[in-house]
Length: 247
Image 1 (cartoon, one colour):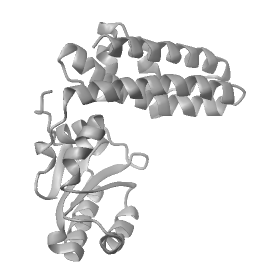
Image 2 (image 1 turned 90 degrees about the vertical axis):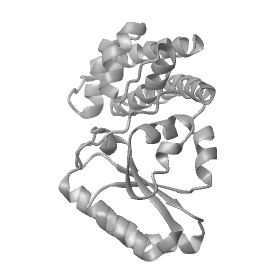
Image 3 (image 1 turned 90 degrees about the horizontal axis):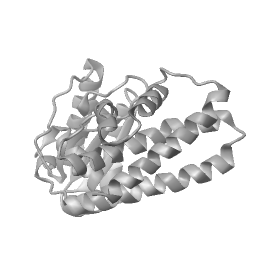
């Protein structure tokens, strides 16, 4: 898998200032126990929406204990007054095993990150192709099973059907981007890029575009549209399952 995808997306000034303060406070409290602070996810990719998107940060430590976690709390509390912080805390020794167990997540971190403090540990990650294929298959098939279960439980609750679609399309697009790359050799770094190219491999791109607009709050289906939309999404997930099985 190609590793050359590191990006330098613009960061809102208030968030950047808060991240700088966060790193400085962590370093002051932890000293040499702090190896790195790494920004990843939507903000690192340029897919950040103020007030709704999380700021994903990985803190890499030499060791982790309850005492060390306690030392991080003042910095966390201050950062969370400014933005929605989603924190991943690992040791440097955890990274190799984490990339094997959670290959899709750590491939994304490797490709789309910014080192805010310390060593660039993310660029050195090694994510095995076979691990990616297996996790991709597992996640998409799990989504397929959950969609069937959710429909039976929520079919009389339109608002729950809608929220299920909003959450589920994000899960599908994350995994579909990996499946499409494994299949074609081309990378699809954003959700929009996945949607744009999905039709080339037999996936209903028009429906994915509609659901991406739903997730962004730019499309509001009527109650009568929800059931057909859900049925069409289930078919797209089946298409994704069939795609993964050909890899």
